[in-house]
Length: 596
Image 1 (cartoon, rainbow, N blue to C red):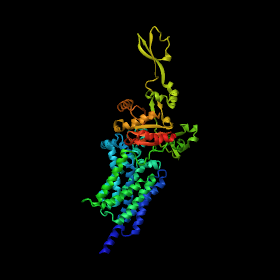
Image 2 (image 1 turned 90 degrees about the vertical axis):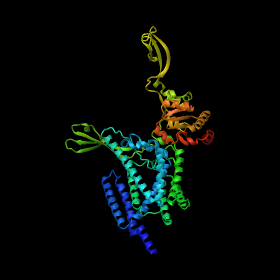
Image 3 (image 1 turned 180 degrees about the vertical axis):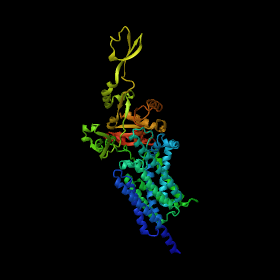
């Protein structure tokens, strides 16, 4: 009887032929790679076709083989390892920066985004942070569940539903980009807003390998993941809670997947978290806690540590900062680290006499091709030799209106030099003159001539300096000053309406300390002048307010408000609103030490 049970169990796991099923699984994984490769070879259609054909044939053949040899259950173990490990890492890198993920969801839910075609999604715009944290926690918990086999029916249904939605979403994003390109090519106006980065891995890919997945790549990533989730789903009725032996196989195998992606992202924390999650879940499962089942005890533990992690990063700062404004980065260097594209341009003409298409390099173009009686212009083509790479920071541009500068600001040598260089281009001396016949008038002093404005008719009421053109205010670009000055404090405010009011006293204390030590302190915001004046009066924060792009402020630091210390453009440190250090400690640790 025991032999029969063992034989049945062995047949259930390995199928009719362990060797053939193992080979089929390996070839199936290769087939998936070939398919994905085939649909990404846009520059070589012939090779793409053969990749797609061979991938499709191998995929179908191996699935049929595993079905006949009862190897799909063995394949589900491989799928559980891949899906579980990837879900844990994906959830963690987004939970590391929940505000960043929330901002990405805001893009989707904007009226011109996903809500343009599906207005229902606009109702989620007010809970993007909560939704972001929930999705991250769900991914981590589901990842651990499929690895350990806990509540696999609920987990597999959740996986399929979640991946079906995300696959549709990335497909929609990809199609939006294609529609935008088509409209641009046709010279039409495109009113929708396309999300170019799905945020699947937060900023981790961009900060580690240099770029995020394109919408096309994100779509295929979700297709592949959906495929493995379906393998788990169709085997859910055979999957049970892991035995000790299965844990010793699945847990280390999943950990290898986590280690691989942690290496890609340059962050080993997911490895530590996964070890704690798996060991903690195993220990919790064996504790006697009332009538709670093992699977639920595991889920409770993993949910608990995931919530703690997500809440900490949401209220403070990411553990790992993948953004170009990370501590230690130099903003000036990040603004100039791009690579210029090297390309050749070609004109495409049709020879009207022969009907032949002629492709002429831009450098070889001559006036004969401009003869419309001989040649008809068809198109312009670009051949990229070296792809361009945009600089990590492209929108760090800081301005202030001249009228908003304090007297102390105007005395700063760099600002004073800017004023002397451009002041006369914007300001001039003007006169307010009065005439009994024509009333009050304002003219440039240089235009005042008694020949045209005789004393008998006009009286000069006042002489003052004002803008030459009131519709063109004089603004100073202080970008270079901020990234080159010795030491400067920057307080960032992404939204004055939702600021953490309890922290203002801490920022005020730093401001006062900076004034005593003659250290520049600026506030970066995207608000209008009326809102700035109201904020300054309400919170008694008498600093110099600079304006910049609101999206870039969100990238600099997630906290609202936040504090950044720059030294010659290098980010020395950052502080969220809930843990701003005392000025004395900052001065001693970062400024006085360097002075000595």
